[in-house]
Image (cartoon, rainbow, N blue to C red; front, side, top):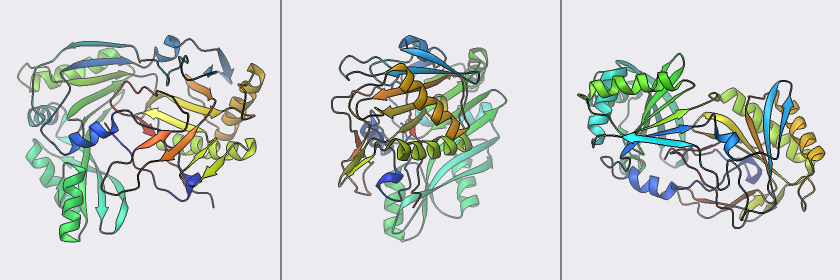
Length: 360
């Protein structure tokens, strides 16, 4: 699972939810040759909003916003609560991570991008960087990154952390390698040892998988394919997060505690794949909003953000927020949804909780 750490200014500078299987993903990061994926899983994110049957659909300047009002967490069926992304699957051939990685590079290289996180002594917050490389196999990948960065490049967080602790010098964790084409993105994710392909076109996604299959000698590698209505980008994310922080102040719903916070607005994406997921607290704090109130909140959010991608999901929950369970640097952070009893289902390999920074 891809996990993105979040720089923290103060308690209000963070928005986090429990990410399902994050502990499993952390354990996998320590075993670089292990992959639990055994097939090709195809997730249709374009159909996600219809599967859950929204309470109503808003039109905001030509943008469709699917609104779900959660009365209780036990019976709620929304894109984030007890609803799976529509999925199909097809057989794949058993392959170890090196075989998959070499096939990926052979099919989509030589010009690729490496995504890394750089850890420094005494600093728990990694620096994220993307490095362009020209490579023909996995051995060249590590060498090219080490040459470009001037430091050791490791494939797991524990290895990177141990290197920093032993040498007292920076070290890098390799997160993924990426190929971007006009209407598709493909990556090999090291924490999961899996190939991920996203595209607005199923035909294009399978064309990329076919190229990798050919490079693997006719064997189909385990993969995750996402058919998406759109991709997200950092500028949009920044505007959405800033809008969330402003609207929280306007609504007055935020309550801080020593170990967490309630009443914040969550802004989420599935691994930079649309649709955007917005989770609002009840505006009055105690009872679910009626349609007029919900529409008013959503329209104000879009007005503040200046961004609305179609489709977009807006859920209203009785409780939002997070509770901090651990702050140890040598563990993957695990945070619990403030909403008691909420079984947040994340049915694909990665979920990104977008960055926030303190405005103070």
